[in-house]
Image (cartoon, helix red, strand yellow):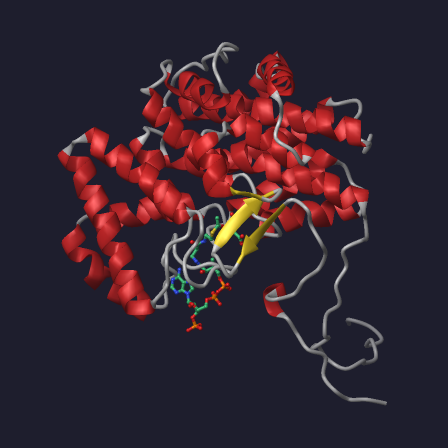
Length: 379
Ligand SMILES: CC(=O)SCCNC(=O)CCNC(=O)[C@H](O)C(C)(C)COP(=O)(O)OP(=O)(O)OC[C@H]1O[C@@H](n2cnc3c(N)ncnc32)[C@H](O)[C@@H]1OP(=O)(O)O
Ligand SMILES: O=C([O-])CC(=O)C(=O)O
């Protein structure tokens, strides 16, 4: 009998567990494609709704398909009275990601077809979540500010309507465009931790709402989606560009993880960062405000210090965090906004997992005590 110890892949690092047709990172060119299209080009030329359609259907929509998709999404945006009541009953201290997780779980409880895992039923559920999640996120941000919710406006696109529901007005098209770019960039990233979570739940033939609820829990953590909020807290903690390098040296010496830096897949920079950084630069330029300049200078100083000291580059959460602040969203809304976008990727993966399902169940190498006899009695 062989006594060779099994090879352990902690964190599943480097393990290829399945195939996917949805997206890939091309290491040689440091680029990301959705269904074959470079994400930079999608961000430059297409709306978030078109990208959602692409991720779900495999092809970009034609004009009639897009009009139909938009009409259906817009009609589904309002929340029913029971959901609104449920949301107002949650404690004021409840993290917005817990609010979203609870809302998705409740949508599942309310849906009589929850257990219908057919493609048609899952497409319909995915569209419900895409349409309603922004309404929940906006209402929750307003609740934190002691304000009543603003109903969705069916005349507005996905991104513009979100601003309308948060603030009662829509900013200049350039700001809406920067937001839409962030949604396109956040939409999908292969087998990241939250998407993989959704696939694990789906692999047991559980329902779509359960898979999305679990995925929200995985995205909340600061090593994943929670980092965009953590970036803003960190910038507020440092305060000034002149302190960035000294702060970083101390943080690294005390083994702190610097939020918004590093990535499991990209070791020489996240392919999405240049596009998001350009959008952020445009927001900074149009603000022409000393406070915004202070934050932008600090942001850039910390990036420079981290690359110089550790050779570790920013990930998408680094420019997105500051961009969301400049757009006027409060910090606890940042990761929920990520959910509003990633719901497209998660549900595309849930459908793909079901189409070629295999139960996801890895092995572990046991490191506990040898077998032993149970003592006769406690006394
Ligand atoms: C959209 C997204 O989810 S993107 C990710 C968002 N998360 C963050 O920004 C949180 C901060 N970053 C991190 O914690 C990590 O870079 C992760 C979790 C994203 C990736 O982690 P892994 O692939 O497991 O890399 P790992 O943690 O092994 O890092 C390798 C080395 O770089 C160091 N490192 C990596 N990222 C960072 C960081 N942000 N700050 C400090 N050191 C870092 C590690 O300490 C480790 O050093 P060591 O070899 O001396 O121990
Ligand atoms: O791919 C990852 O591990 C994390 C990430 O960037 C994402 O989910 O967008």
